[in-house]
Amino acid sequence: ITDLHSQNGSIFLLCNGYVETVIGVAGERVTLPCGYSVKTYGVTDTCWGRGEVPYSKCSKMVVSTEGDKVTYRQSDRYKLLGRVRKGNVSLTIINATEADTGIYGCRVEVPGLFNDLKYNVLLLIVEQGKLSSEFSVSIIYIIHFEAEIIGFK
Image 1 (cartoon, rainbow, N blue to C red):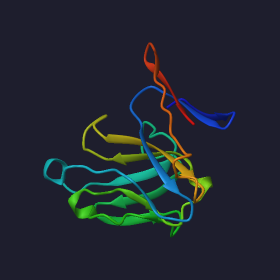
Image 2 (image 1 turned 60 degrees about the horizontal axis):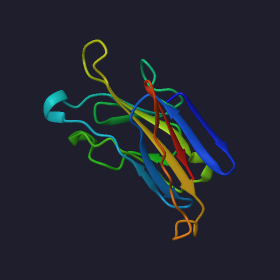
Image 3 (image 1 turned 90 degrees about the vertical axis):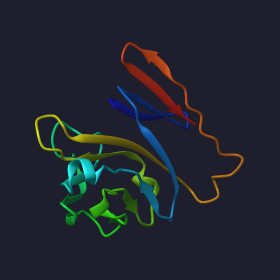
C-alpha cells in the first residue's frame, strides 16, 4: 500500500498487492482478521500496527505477543479475543471511532529470513445509521504494471 487519501467524499487506496477491507460501525466493536497454522509454525510471536506491515516488526504498534501472551497493548480498546494459542490473532477494536479508519498490518513471525506472514487490512468506520441501502462501497481496480488503485465511495 503506497497511499491512502480522500477526495470528494471518497477514499482512494494505492497499493501493490492484496488488501482485505473491513467495514465497521462507530461505537461498536470491529474485528480485523489474522491467523496462522499452529500445526505448521508452532505458537509464535505476532504484532499488529497502524499502517502497512514494514520489513520488520510492526509500524505504530497497537498490540504484540510473545507466543500466546499479550506483551504490549497501546490501549484497552485493542484486544485479541480469539484463541491465540490456536493461531487466531485477529484484532478486535472496542468502541470503534471514525479515527480508527485506516490501514492495519498483522505480522506473524516465522523463523528464517523473510519468512514472516504479513497481512494488511483496510478498516473503514462509518457513523451509526449510515450502513443502509443508501450506503454503498464501490471498488474499482485499475491495474498499472504492479499497482492497483482502489476507490471506496
